[in-house]
Image: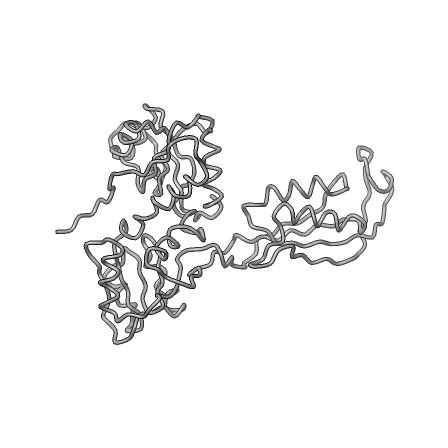
Length: 364
């Protein structure tokens, strides 16, 4: 297997289209055609991570966080980022990062947090916009059913729990081909009128290329007329954070102690304890202060995330319990998620869980 074949599996779980615009995901270092000898899965890629990959004969590192986040103008080894990239290149080790692509996956970082905490009836906390597009095309009436079926087969027309969703309207189309044209219907140089069906379907951005290929392959016209627009509709199965319910409600202090033990953290920073039970819990791996308002709108009794600043704890406003368990601690189980997923997909070489803790924060 080469690197592309391995990362194609990863992108079924976390398509790169899901990543936030500010992020840097995908293959960061290496040749995608390189044959893979082994995969090391880690949360961060540091020099010691590259050393571990060398020792375990893994030439592909799958990292949650991207080691290259902003542009590198020089690679001289003066910073830890430059040293990692330099060592990886010198030892022919590729580095691939998932980051917010996996954050926005239904089965990603926050889903793993829910699993560890035992939350039930989970759903996305902040459904993502800009993922759903609409394709509209025009086809002779007699070809409409076949084209519609081809678009469905390519992945168009899926809305929540429904598939093969479309809208059709009948009308009249006109066209005239020039001397270089080769019209399937009508004659070049003459205006032709054709009874046509307008077909509209929704699609995920990750499927756009395959759906357009299906459109052009199965449409009878030499030149295919179509429009694609990005909608403001949210995708209920793609987005940041999740919200779910504990099997049994707890009081606030009991919940915090459960959280500390279950999430294996040495420190939980939290807002004022409330005199109400904790049942509905929102979670978001990594820096999640931006979603406090979303957790409150979702009716969560507690919100578990990381990197809250001093003034952000005031946003609890006595109606939600905010719990900061630490950035690394909130994402630590992501490595296991990726290893388990890849082992189910790949069996012809080793997929290894990194034994190194890359947490840069210590408690005394």
